[in-house]
Length: 413
Image (cartoon, rainbow, N blue to C red; front, side, top):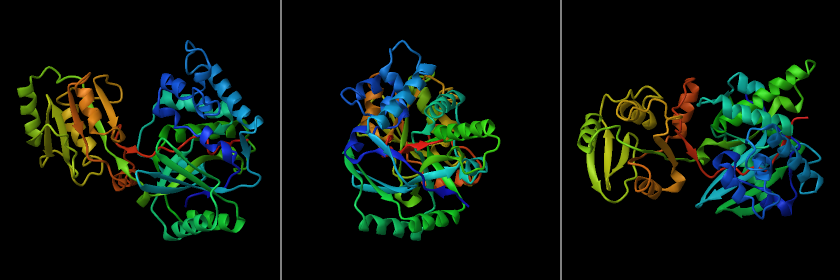
C-alpha cells in the first residue's frame, strides 16, 4: 500500500506563480541558468541553482551555493512572494503541451515506501549527483523539486480529480515556454481523506523521473532520523514532495544517440558490421523516425537508413534485453563503437526527442559523425522492469513536459 498525504505547501501567491516557476535544475547548465534568470528576480532558479547569484569562480558544489539557496528561498517568503498554506492540502497540477494533457496530484510520499520498494525505481543513481541534492535539501530544509511518479490508473481517483476541477476555480493558470500550467487546491478534509485512502489501496508507485532527487530526499530523511532518535514517523522529514500521474496520461519521448566517430572503421567496414545485426534499408535524405519497437533510424554521410533488429539480437522475454536502448547498446554501441559506459564516455551524446530529428542532423553536420533515432520506451516497459527489480540502461526515457519547480515547496521541519 502506498502512503500519499496532504501537506502545507509553501507556494507563490497567485499573481507571482508565473514569475517564480522555473524548469528543473538539471535540464540546463550554470551558464544557461545565468542567462535564464536575467530580469527575473523571483525565478526559482535563484534557489535551485543558486550559483547564478555568485561569482563564476565559485565551485557549484561549494557550501556557499547551498547557503545562498537557503537565503533566496527564505527571501521569497519574507518578501511575500511565496506563502505557506494554513492547512494541509493536496494539489491538482495539469500541464498541456502540444494539445496533450496530463494531470497529476501533488502531495507527499513516504521515505519508508522508497526504502521498502513500494516506490519502485528503474535507474542507478550517481553519488556525485546525490551529494549535490542532499546538500541542497539539507541546507534549504525543504524539498524544492517534486519527484515525478506514476501509478496504474484508477477510475475513482480520475473521476474525483475531474469533478474537483469542474467545481472549483484554479489558483494558477499560466503558459510558460508553450506549456500550460494549471493548479487547483484540494483543501476539503473529507476529499483529502478519500484520496489518502484510495492511494493506500494502490500497491506500487513508480519513479518516472527524478531518481537522484528521490534518493537524496530519502537520505536526508534518514539523516534527520539519526539526529532525532525519538522521532515518531509523523515528522515532515519522513516524507518527500511528489507529483503522481496516472500511467495512461503520460508519454515517453524518444531519446536519441549521436557518436563522434566510427571507432576506426571505414564506412564500408562499419556498414558490414551493422548488417550483421540489423536488416538495413536506405531511405534517403529525409529523416527517418522509427514507427515500431526494434526498428531504428541511422544517419551516416547524409543518408538515413532504417535498421530492423534481427532475430537473436535480443531476448523478447527479458524486459531489459528487449528494450531498443539495450539492443543498440549490446549489439552496436559497445562492440562496434567500443563504448562500454555511455554515462561517462565523451564520444557519445544523447538528444531528447523534444529537440526533433533536425537536431540529430545538425550535430552530425557539426561535431558528430553518426546518429541513431530511437523508438520511445513505453510506460509498460518501465513498469515491467521496475516490477522485475531490474534497471534500465542510461538515457532510456525522456518525459515532456517537464514539471515546473517553485510552485510547491515542502518544508522538512
